[in-house]
Amino acid sequence: MASIPSLTRPESLAQQGYATIRRAIRDGKIPRRQFFSETSLAESLGVSRTPVREALLNLYRDGVVEIVPKRGYRLAELDENDVMEIRLLRVALEQLVVARLCEVATPAHIRELRAILKGKGRSQEDMYTIDEAFHIRMAELAGLRQIRRELLSVRGKMYLMASGTRVTALRNETVMREHAELLDALEAHDCARAKRLITEHVGSSIDAFVAARTQLAEHGRLERIS
Image (cartoon, one colour):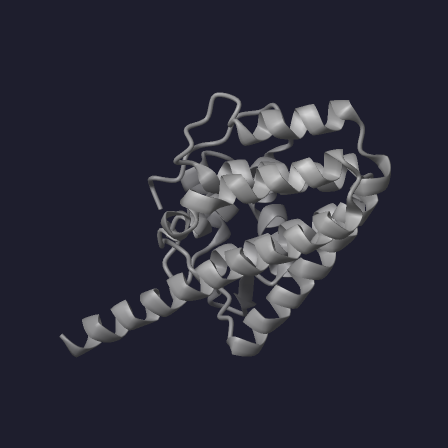
C-alpha cells in the first residue's frame, strides 16, 4: 500500500483519509481478502492512527470494510443480493435528488454543474472523480445532506464491486452525454424527463460495474486454474 498518496491538511485528516482510502479501494490498491491494520494504513498515509481509525469506522458503517476481531480490517464481500440492493438504492436516492433539483435549480446551479463535467482542470481519463463530484454536488445543491451521505456510502460499495478494474473504459463514450442530457432536462425543469434519464444513467452505470465484476471473477478463476 506504499503507493497510496500521503495526506495534507486543508480538510480534517479523517475526511481526507476517508476519501483517500475509498480511492485506493476503487483503484485496487488494497487487495481483496487481505487483512490490514490501522497502523499499516497510517504509515502509508503519513498520519497518526486516530484519523485513520475514524475513516475506517466510517467505511465500516458504509459496508465497505469489515472488522474482524484480532485480525484487523478487510474489504467486504458483496453477493448478488447486495448488488441488487445497491442498484435499487442508488436509483431511489438519485431520483430524490433530481426531483428536488427540478424544483430549486437556478441558472447558477446548472452552470456550476456543467463546469464540473468539464473537469475543472482534470483529465477526462479521471471519469470516476468527475462523475462523483457531479452526483455529490447535485445532492448538495438540492440541500439534501443526508442523501449526500447515503450516496457516498452506495458509491463506495460500487467501487468495491469492481475494485481495480477499468469500469470507466466501458462507459466513457456515453457517460458525459448522459450527464449533459440530464442537465438539459433540469435546466428546463422537465422533472419527468430528468427522472427517466437519471434512472437510465444509473442503470447503465450499475450494469458496467456488474460487467467489470464478472470479468474480474472470471480472470481470478482462470488464474487459479493456470
